Image (cartoon, rainbow, N blue to C red; front, side, top):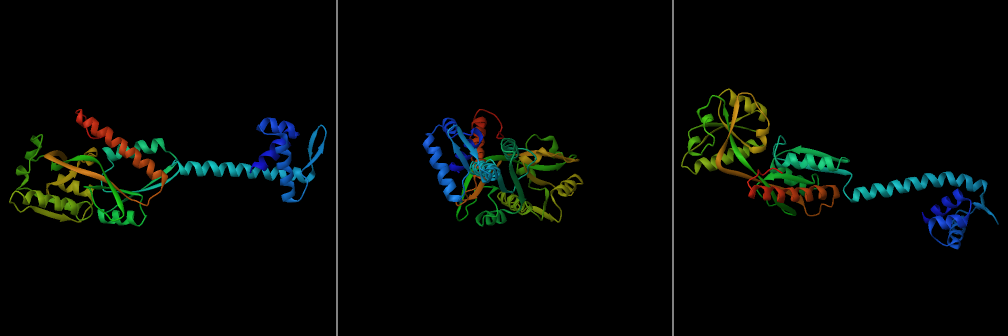
Length: 303
């Protein structure tokens, strides 16, 4: 590539001496480099004379190819450098939380604004499916509840969200600013059979059983949006995380459950060397520290 640069500048300046001045090298370096290039391809590229140099017919043809080659090499170097710095590429993300609002929504929006050439690919699923995908390098990272342990993976806790009960708008608990578990022990709950329904079911059973009460939890074959519609129709109550409350559903009201906070973590493979993902992880850590500092000063947990 160095010899090609010598050739291009010498062809433009029609002088080895001027090419040497422009490139900041000795004239003998230019002359020797071009001679080596001519020996390698087996043809003279320049006619040398006292006042400078002139391209041969072969040299003129070689010039066109050399310009294209240098352009492609420079593009390849820039592209590889950008990929190495994580400025281009793809990050495959497993999510087990709403993107309606909150920490994760803010993180991904900020990352995309700062890295517009990186494609973010999302997939929903159960925690077990996400962890398996991360372990087998089908996903770069999964954002999950709790602090799950997985073989070959690293986990870092990033943020917390309050837990909310979803009520029909005519329910008596709507008058409360905060709801307690004692106030919910006699209620009928509904959850989806799809994720995150099973986790919400286990969460309800654990907390209500701790009060010595067997909870009434009905599984419904609907997704989250239709589950909210069933709540509005009075079929039962359900739970959701703080991020989900950023989405409004007609006929339902959200109320926080006293003292209940749900931790969220990022999980990724220790062998993941995707630079674009590493940039996302670094940003997540920074925003997490910023959010924690804000919460100590009375701010919300969302950056």
